[in-house]
Length: 396
Image (cartoon, rainbow, N blue to C red):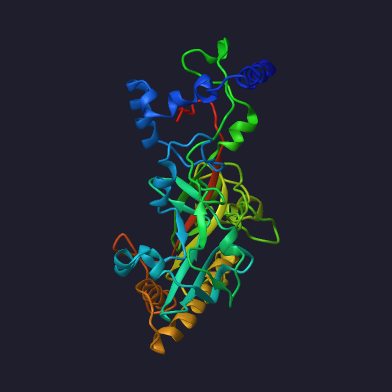
């Protein structure tokens, strides 16, 4: 498809098809689309490939529908509609229309003041006066590091005090278009041709298509920092100590950060400003991951004032303060609703209790059922992966 001759051949085919009554049959679209016109072996291959498919960032609804795409997409968990029938037993008995109510936005709580990657929306049902919460996320993590991205334009357009109408789709994965038509692939112009690069079932694609059909991975990297550890100044300078990329920044190549164990015999050399800006591969523990940092969770069993005494913790302290403000605001807003006797969903009540625990200085975090003395940081990195040599494509 990357060759000029390929597009020339496609233009000639289009001219021929203008005079052909059954254009789809002539192009062979039906061969890979409808079960009554597909070879049983290729039908089995298609079924197996679907189980291994990934969610690409530019998915499109098929131009030739088989009438099952939207039926499958209807039951997907990758979108959120303002409709309580999904969560209410009454909704299944009385019907979808009777249980869907407008909701008023009473609060929006961002996790980071400088980014809307993650925030919490508190809603009030205008009919039942029940309060609920919806979390805005950039992506949904699946098995291992697989994920799908969310399209959040609708939920981002609302402000506090706005009314969300019934059946409004607040966000959805990139497998849906604006009209909520479902697709798990792309409509690609293709042609058969004699080419040494396409032997043994290989396919040649353009660079643009490789980018459009990229998929994403959401990596979670957990870093344990003991009392005798420090993170080196990999992203900073002599004036600013910066251990890892900030939110929405890319990693330094494939290196997320590096942890150095303090050796007091070599401390005068290892802790020099110049040495702290370079990785010592003989002794440092390097954490590898490439992509854009989208979220950070910090579990700290040390008083924050103690951390401020050490310049090596400058960036860590900044994100602990962001996190504490987030949970303090959650505790304040949700606690006011619960303590006043308002009707609240179970999710809202659970999050309030979690926020209370998170901000309680007497509660210590545990990892794998054991206490830890210092800090555990959990990073979420979003990696964009275009098609490359070795990627597998399958006809629908």
